[in-house]
Length: 328
Image 1 (cartoon, one colour):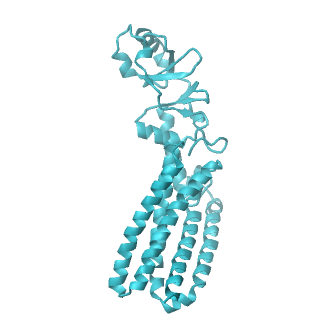
Image 2 (cartoon, one colour):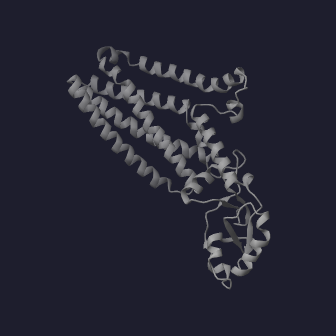
Image 3 (cartoon, one colour):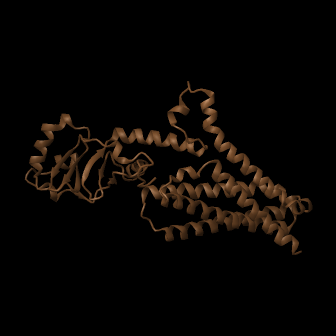
């Protein structure tokens, strides 16, 4: 999702060399003549890229702006400076976020010294979007094999089983671990069966807030790789706290009205608050940590993250229940 070299499809693999770049000392009239003479050989015709004598990208001019300008104006005086660019080794999925966010039809690719090395054309952008969308859908289901192998109707059942079985086995052992956690609190459950009735809703809400946090942080990593971790985490904890308090109060009210139990209501309300806060923090931190180690954050989605969330939520829930009920 960000500039991770050597592991993902990078922006540099999708570039085209069929674009128009001119020196920043040219006049609009000269650029128009150049455009007319080489238009048939260009793949990117929406923008003209302005460089200096060392090849460093100085700015961009749209064809519309060029055609509306006087011929004697120096091109450097009308360019859009600091254009949206990506590094050669940037993960190509970042291109999608930038194009959608800034309404671009093509995006220039530069090296570490900001030299223009190519342009990702609209055709390639559409292909990237299509492939990344399919890949993310498969990863969210715990399938991490080649897309075409999975989607091809002629793919043998054996290969499909091999692609899907690993994440399910992880989920199986995770489920057994969750069952072991529940077993450890059998005494509490046998005395207060009402607690068991609220396991699904607490687990679901914790999973949901964790998934939301992970989705948002992955998008942020793609759009703004250099964002402030401290500020983002502070905001996410604040959001998780408010969501936890809101849903905790709702659940407390429901339990109090439906089961006439203040104690159970307090346990469930406090449990959902801490569970949602914890999942928001962990989901955000895990995605950032994976990125720091040059691992695609998308692999943390699916069955693995779900079972981690379920287990920690159950531990929080029953630990709080034990503390409250044994103190009575």
